Image (cartoon, rainbow, N blue to C red; front, top):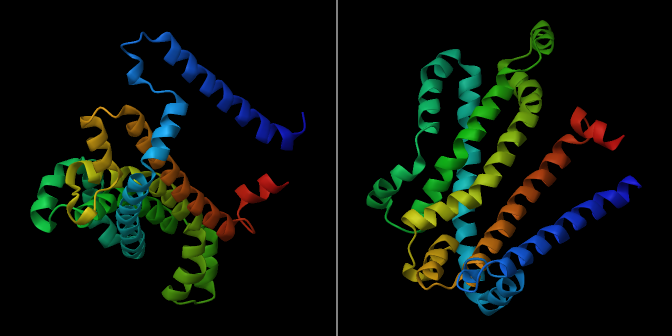
Length: 263
C-alpha cells in the first residue's frame, strides 16, 4: 500500500472501528444504563442544540487558557535565561521549582479565589501554574546542553556572552523549547477546564466549559456533557496544531528530526 494512501486510510479505518465499538457498546448496555453512554449521533444533536452556549463557554475557556499559556511562555523563557546563564541562580532556585512542580495545583484554587477572586483571573493563574513547569524545565535544559565544541569556538572568537546567548544557545535550545511548548499546549485547555471546575464563575456570563460541564452533569444532560467534552478535545487539538506548525516553521530547515522525515 502506498505510504500516502495508508497515512489517510489507516486513521480513517481506526476511527470507523472506534465508532462501531461505541455503537456496539451502547446497544449492549441495558435500557436503564444506556444514558451513561450516549451514541455519537445523540452527542452531535446535543452539540447542535447547545451550540451557542458551548461556543460562548469555549470562548471563555480559550481566553483563560491563552492568558495563562502566554504568561507561562514569557516568564518561563526569561527565568530559563537566568537559570542557564548563572549557575548560582540555577543551584539556588531549581530545587524549589521541582518541589512546586510536584505540588498538586488544585490545592492553590481556594487560595487563588481569596487573592484574586473567582473567574478569569483565577483560571488564568491555574493555567499558568500547570503550563509553566514543562516550559522552564525543557528550555533550561536546552540552554545548558549546547554543544561544548561550539561554545569553545565562540569563546575562541571572543564573542560576548550576549552574542553567545542569542546566536548559539537560544537557537540550539529551540527544539527543547518547542518540546516544552507542545506539552504545555496540551495541558493549557485541560488546565483552564480544571480552573473552571475549581475557581470558575458564571458572573458576567463568564462561565467556561468546565463550569458548563458541571451544569450539564447536575441536570443529567449527558449527551450535552459529552458534547462539552468534544468541544474541549477540539480546543486542545487547535492549541497543539498551532504549536506544531510553529515548531515546523522554526526547525524544519535545519533540525535533524524534520530533515529525516522529509527524505
